[in-house]
Length: 94
Image (cartoon, one colour):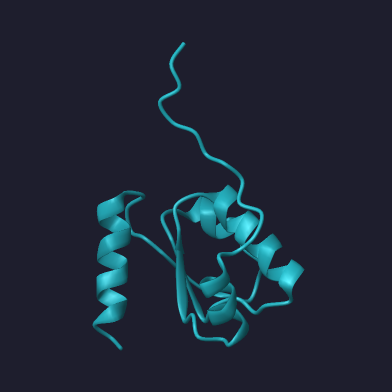
């Protein structure tokens, strides 16, 4: 058996990211998995940080893992290209 992919659970934000979150300077985040979105939320809650203003998700399943009340946007297709198109369309809106 050969391991070709491994995901390690992150236990804390990098110091620079933590500082930006504490200052409310991260406006948006994007998620590729429901587990990552859940873990991000747990880490925010542990530090008493607010969610970024906008959240972009690869799929509806990921969006469903998020708390209610967030400004969530979901890619039209659950692909990297779909998420990229979503981000580009929102970036051009300012």
